[in-house]
Image (cartoon, rainbow, N blue to C red):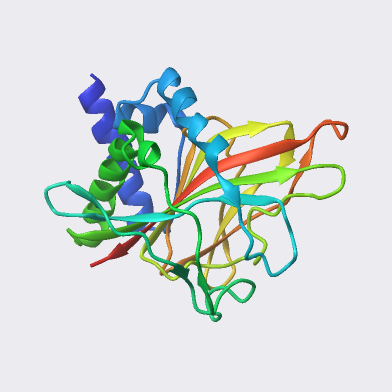
Length: 241
């Protein structure tokens, strides 16, 4: 039964990405596909406590913590962690923070080797190969913590509605603590709305064909203004080799 369900989960994603270009995969579906339990998600979330301040925010914000790293994923489903390097987007893609090399802290060894991460990356690669025909991928990983307080709201997508200049883009919910907002939207190039969702459960996943769609996320604020809050996500970008 689990194998049949996993096949259906993957097929639904393939159809949506090959069609409109956006797809929401609820936590239960991804957990079945990747063989991840609720306890696994909770353990995996601890890596987000090791993120460091992003000092490259052109809006002056101090709300974003992150790390960065990249893998190669080959046709056999083998992942190879690449040497750490600066992250760069051109300003045409990211008008806020693009046009420079950003020397971000690398992924920790424990994060890069985590079995939850590796299972998710391989299963997503299979979905994207089924859509695109590409068998080898560059996979860039962006674990983010967006903090929110009474003094500063958090901006998960400070550049507004955008694309990332890759082949497929995903946003994986890890945890939400004392925050409201954070509504994700996916749109066509012409601005037509494809879907809107608020990722809320650990393992909720939003997927998009970055060549044909734009995406955005609304700001987050603390639900209880007397306490700080945060939104933890893993953005994963697949670029065809």
